[in-house]
Length: 151
Image (cartoon, rainbow, N blue to C red; front, side, top):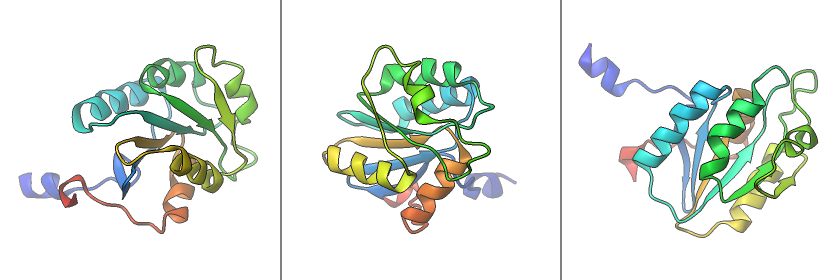
């Protein structure tokens, strides 16, 4: 059982999708999962600045998610998954952000490209807010997920 648990992998949860700059994918979609994500990011990763790529579904607690993620974010790129019936419009998220500037990008792929252009080698790009967003990021990045031990 221990070996099974130790080797278990949950796609879309703290998945490392690129090394330089490091891109982490996590489907945190509520306040509790965002808080757990922040704790894990602080504990596991070292980075100069964190670039947040965020897209959230309409029915999720965006205020709670922002409350957890904004304090660790140096730069914010808002986007939405290609799920029109479910995806929250990035502008409605931007209106809730009072402490940071935030860019709006139409697609997850373009948001990741913008984050990569903005990031240095020692920065961390965090893609989160929705499993739909994480799924599109995985597809855009060629499903290349790197386990932390594979540095």
